[in-house]
Length: 407
Image 1 (cartoon, one colour):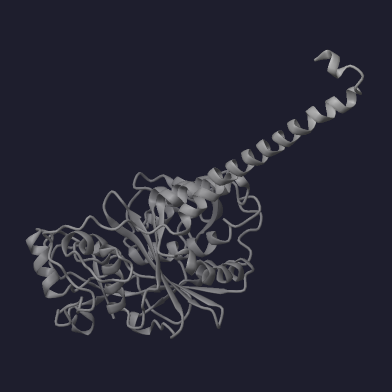
Image 2 (cartoon, one colour; image 1 turned 180 degrees about the vertical axis):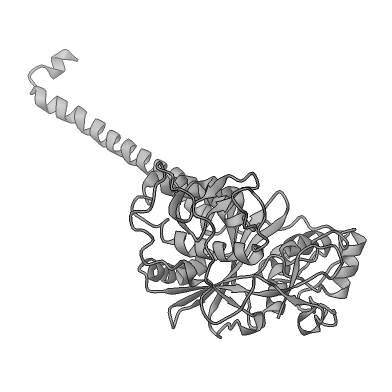
């Protein structure tokens, strides 16, 4: 071998050896990069692109209610105008002007707190408007996306919003539906609820229980999403709010909500007043401050306005919480899409959270119709108006379960 090589220039041999090594190394590097991108970004993205709520393990013994029939009992004495004994919600004054808050007592600022350097510039905390259900207009040709914040432990929809998108006028309506809304279920549904001993449970006739009733009690079938719980919720909303046909849904559980806030490193939120715990501790300061995931969850779930000693002022309620939730969504949405929050590591984390905790009906085919809306929203071309649907307090079962009826 040495004899054969004797007399050949050394550089030729080294070049012939190096070329294959360089080529193999380059191929290996490309494979590693592509594999990393696929498993850390592309695969989670593909899993998120179409991630519907899993089809129900339908209760074969449940009463089957077919899509297309009446989902409400219009003869129910507490349905809309039939509710003669309904009294106005004292915290639900309806007027055409944005709701004005009465600030609570202001605590001494925490020297270690982190205020927003922009001081909430461009955001108006009073933008949530209270309206009657009958005044809520869903223009023909607009999109309606149902947004559900879900408590998986209780199987209840703690937050119910409808995002109405008008692509022509560039207006988004974020409509908050009271979770305490009374649902006068159709008689067949009522019989099924009695059969499963669910009828007399406090709060079982609230709209936030519709996903559970649709999937477990009545096995609602024939809806567009192939999930009996989501389909029944959509049918009830369409019946209560004429003109509101749900085109898509997004379903988020609270664990996913907290994870997203954690990955973002916290979010800036404007609180109209100090918010206290039942122990009298200051949980949320008045003003615009950066909140952790746990603080943000407290903010969007709190329905009671408490004094510094933890005593209930009696001026809170679901409307108070709904206004805070509507403003939170409006305020935080643009914060997540910043350069700081769009790094590879954070995007990868978002994808994993979205896969585990955020479910929706937006297929890859539909995605192309939503992308221009998202781009225009990111460029601040859309005007966002938040609405809170007001109701009247009723007590249809005498169990003091805090029902409201829409009018």
